[in-house]
Image (cartoon, rainbow, N blue to C red; front, side):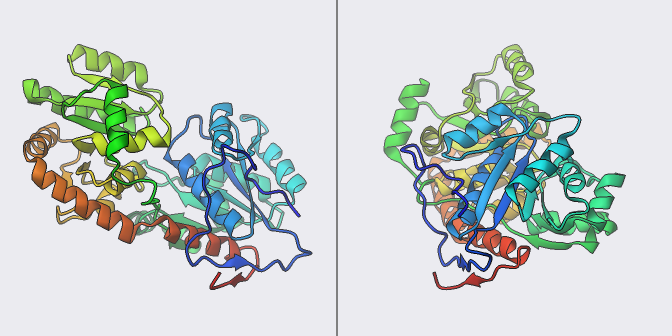
Length: 397
């Protein structure tokens, strides 16, 4: 029997089977099916958190999920979550190394979520019987369509997973060759028991972060161009003396540039890097509003987490974000993409109307719990793995 991906250590997070998820019927010599989650990401992003949930879903359903990463820092994050990731060298020969790893592990399915990784997995599995699944997490305007991507869609790629319905419809409308592969929507999910309003955690965060009792905005996400932090900075600049304190969680290539920009504009901004989940829940619970100016999100997991913590959300009306928070304004406020003026006015209004913001937060939590549960996400990936490995699922577990 293949060892579980999850270590039996004290640091292992609390685990539970997905609600109503079926268990895998062990049809092949009593050996669990090995599913590889491959990533070449160079920093810890929301996709890494999604991989943790996918691995948990597969593990609880009887599969043997295995994570393979090319970046040591990303691998360390998986290790800190109680996993045992393999580390493969990036660069020249990456596909050959992945091919050797898949052969050594006797892997039966590969899941990737970056265009680069789809190319690597295609070369690694050509001529084998190992199918590839692509979680479409490409945020650029045009879908990838180079020659190797097209080869993937003709050969090894068996199914593409979209994180939102709007993303699925938009991408497939633009790119006819992608329609030859089956497409499924599996929303990201949030554990509403872990992400919930927590007054004690909020108090501890305020004390630890030194924000006292003053109102503050919270932004969470990689410090990279697609998150459009410069739009948020411009909005705060427009607000002048009315601008609230801003707390940013995240790391990435733009960190130095954004720090310099905030100082030049004389903005009250705290860059707190990457933080543990417990501290993140406290920050969500304490903030006056969660703000997300990026307009190309394939989903927006941080937005969903803030909603589960009953916070009013201000987000760009772009990408999948309207699908996450809804368009009617009851669970969050959408602003014109890349409009610092609209963002500034919305922030001012939300801060000035705390009772209305609180009601919006309550409705946001209800929506997050009802429509984007982690149990639903887990079921989706367990069923996905079963479809492509020939296992049947035993329902009613």
